[in-house]
Image (cartoon, rainbow, N blue to C red):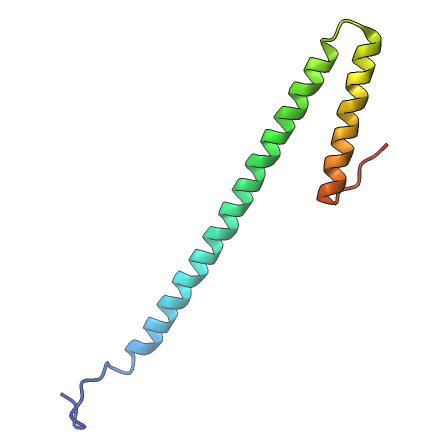
Amino acid sequence: MTPSGGSAARPWLWPWIAASLAAVGLMLIFHQVVRGAVLQGELRQVAAMAQADAMWRCKGVAELRDRDSCMVQLQTGVRQAALVQGHKVMP
């Protein structure tokens, strides 16, 4: 019991509690940032694999005219997806 009649925490304890809460908060923020980066990397990898698969299928088409048409459609889709995401695509 303190002289005032209430129970109070020791004064040196409050800075440690505040520092601990700040550290936990920073770790949670860091976790969210890393998790978002990992998710973005996974999505980029899936998109690259889909692009490579589509290109492989286009190159497997027997007719030259159909193959060229497939490649043009593939490139058009890549350009449109890049424009939606706000990236520049080389012609």
